[in-house]
Length: 127
Image (cartoon, rainbow, N blue to C red):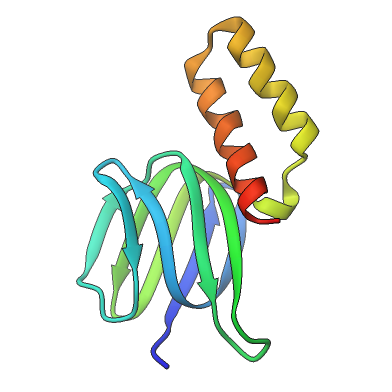
């Protein structure tokens, strides 16, 4: 089976690295799916969940992360997601994210509301 080598890196750490059969992310041009053999790509990431369909010795699985800003690059079987901020779904404190969403709505802070919403969607998708 053809695979992608995927690196998800935030400004402060390597978030996830491994093999995958498919990655779905949101760019400023819309949602994009990357599979082995995709044409070379360089795009700006938009805040949203990133879904990685993993492969490997332990079998298939799914990794979901909340990503906020950055770039996505694909060439020669290697996919790099270089994010300003990224959190794996299982790292997200759902109650805290819900409180942040409620606060952002009461403050009419659209950017904070979007970040909290992305975190909640990623957490739900990763469970």
